[in-house]
Length: 149
Image 1 (cartoon, helix red, strand yellow):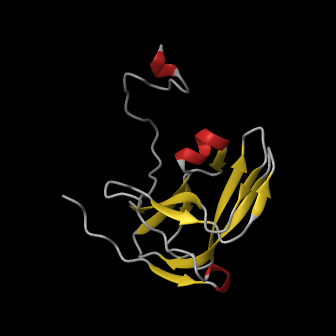
Image 2 (spheres, rainbow, N blue to C red):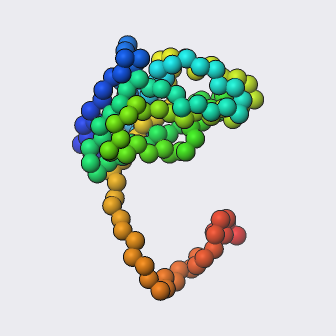
């Protein structure tokens, strides 16, 4: 059973004319593919906030996460920085995708090319409560890599 879809308002910007809206590539896809609204050459080690040509209004209680595309990562070393990136429900500016080239060759980003995925997600509000002690667990204060020993 699939959850009901949330409605996200999308405003196309002038440089986004003619581009496809974010969409699912398959019935089981979790992320909506988003395309670049500009052409650029991403040299090895470089990063760039790539324009998408649209802005969105996310309903309160939700965020949209920006995630890399696995094919670009595997084939070309192209990933998204700050992954998953979060677009907050009160942001109304252009959606941009921070791409980084971790590969050894320059990568040409072409307008209309799929560059990332957008995953809408519910946000669970939280509040911190200061205490004197925390409950004990079998892991305790074991940090990075401590559960693999």
